[in-house]
Each structure stands twice: as C-alpha cells, then as structure tokens.
Image (cartoon, rainbow, N blue to C red):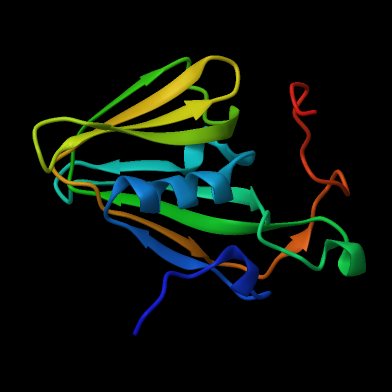
Length: 158
C-alpha cells in the first residue's frame, strides 16, 4: 500500500518534485514562496513549449535551521505544455531586475488545460496558458546561508 508523502517525513536533501494536478502545484507553491530571481533567469522556449526560471528559494522544508541557520538553494522551476506567456509589472528590457515570487496558482480551463499564474511582489504576475499542467521543481545547487540570516517574514502574519 502506498501513502502520500508527509511534510514530517522530509529530510535535508535536494528536492525533485513534479506537479500534474492542482494539489501538487500547491505544494510547489508553498516551497517557492519568497524565492527571488533576476528577470534574466526566465526562459520561454516556444518551440519546446517550455517556460523555466532559475530561482533562489528559501528552504521552508528545512527542519535544521536551529543548527545551521536559514538557508536558500538555487532551484529550477519549469513548466511544460506552455502555449502562451504573458506578464504584468515585469520590465522585459531590464535584465537586472530582481523579482520575488509570492505564489503559484492554477486556474482550470478547458480540460486538461488552464492557466498557471505566478504572483510576484509589487503587483507583478506571469501567466502561462498551458495545454495541460506539468511542472517540475528541482534543486540544482547545495544550500547556502541566506544572506539575511533569517527566514522571510510577512507583515500580515500573526
């Protein structure tokens, strides 16, 4: 009998996760909350129907923060089956612009397609029209100490 993975079963190892449905994407969204990336690290390959980001994500899953401090890791976030990409609040010519990812949401359309919306800090957004949901989050470097030395905070958290 197989069981779903539980957060408590996590270990300090690189992530390599896939998303084929909304619930899977919610897990990836939680793991990339507060990730930062330069606009230059976004890639849209129309012929391959692939959109990818190389981002520096906070390791929310890391239970060893009290031992070694807050950490980030470079991760690849890729979406396949992408038909169209649109953005708002992202200066396409400003390759030095650093963006902060707040969440990823799924809006179903004509099955199995829909829209993936990446919400950015500062009222920015990236929308991916997809034929079917298929995403991957994969850590590609070793973790490193977060420059701030602490976990990101949110003013509305109690």
